[in-house]
Image (cartoon, rainbow over the protein chains, first blue to last red):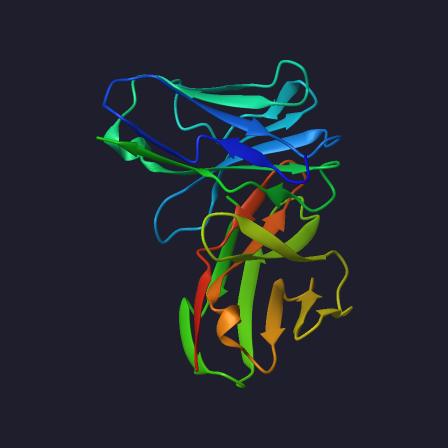
Length: 113
Length: 109
């Protein structure tokens, strides 16, 4: 595709439920990043993939968060046992390699009620 | 811990004014400094700076990096209402971007 695509654009879920957020990066981009942005803050790093492997997952806040990229393209961010504090905009970005600019998707606004 | 600080946090100007946005950083393994514009959800890429003293320009926007003093500025000349947005500065260590809080710019007609 022409840009980074994220689905869904909005997700409302009940506390304790499981959610999956999808990211389809720019075709050919090997580097993929997930960020989380709370209101009034800059995006906060979660995880970086180079190809299929998570090269840096040090930003994941706890073990309820997990992400995969099985074929080196589409990535899914998975959140178990959601909490109200998980409410935020989840942004995905991709770049052709880790030394070039990253391009962001429109984000998924997650609301946990 | 990597840190990026932007100032001011908010700025209100009139159309036609020139603005300067500031970004300072403390980063291990620094590779580059990036500027993004965020209007709704998606930050859109403006500039990536890797070398000191080389100004990058795109229309009315320009940016420069000082790697000795660890800061960057983003200038916008002849501002328009369409420039109203949050401007994010981020440092790159290769595997991640560390963002500042952003500067909320409002341009009034």
